[in-house]
Length: 375
Image 1 (cartoon, rainbow, N blue to C red):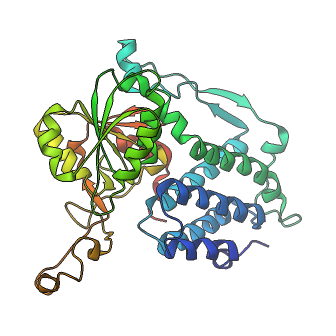
Image 2 (cartoon, helix red, strand yellow; image 1 turned 180 degrees about the vertical axis):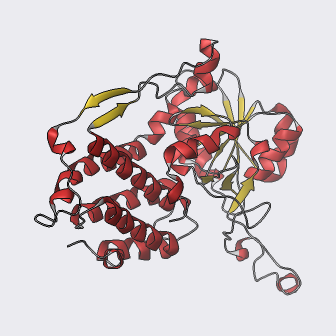
Image 3 (cartoon, helix red, strand yellow; image 1 turned 60 degrees about the horizontal axis):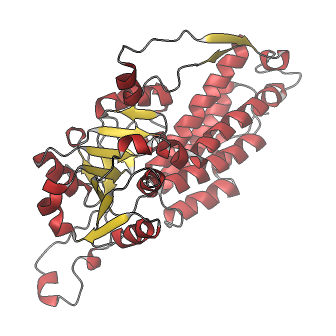
């Protein structure tokens, strides 16, 4: 007998994560993605199902529950879509008895394309035969209803572990080519504190001598923590107010930003101040590079506001109640994330190579299944 999807969505482990997401006790793209993978792994290990459609519906019901709890953390839905993609892939592989082995993981890198100086060759997938235990899939077996789940679960656990490993090593994989993107004596502008950008800059420090200008990113002032961290790593760091970004841009060689979510059109949600820096960079023809893991790719569009995401922080940090004469006369909007249009971005540096904004749609097509865009 299969597990009821509605009952799975109300399991304690799912309810606990949904409550933590709702209360913003779990924040940040990578942290929410890791928590989501761990919950999905527990769910899959415990549920009963006799065919692939039941399993997919169970995972989607859990995904809907978590996304509704915190729709502003896009990586929750992305992770669910990624797991669903792996489930279908492993099911088709096991049911057909063959596995497609890709030998061209990094062929889509811009850097590799330039170095090779020739068009990329499409490698022919190689087929390898699986074990008999993986081939013998019996759906809806009345004599042994759990036979299908018992055969498929070990393979699914390995697939989910691959997703987990990718999330845990995402900073290292993005930073491995840092010295090829950062050159000696460069002046780089960054906004706020981004763990991905921080790891990227620190990875290049032993090979290059460069200067990082950090905007303090009011009103959160997260740039202070970033400047202190980079300075302690031996990187020449200068902390400046946000108001001086445009004046300094003529001396900047590169703008490096982090991303909260990369949208389907090649734009992105990033910390407040990113739009200011990207717009100033465009006026001075300064390249804008975004460091982000592929788990932030989101098959969604910005339909709410032309300049910001639908996520606002406390307005009192911009205009306090002590300014009594002004509070009653103005509406204070303090967006947590800016929306940066794709034409303001030159390249995305991901854990699977470098890509222009125009290629994001193809990456999303490869990472997720079309039927999962709406959970």
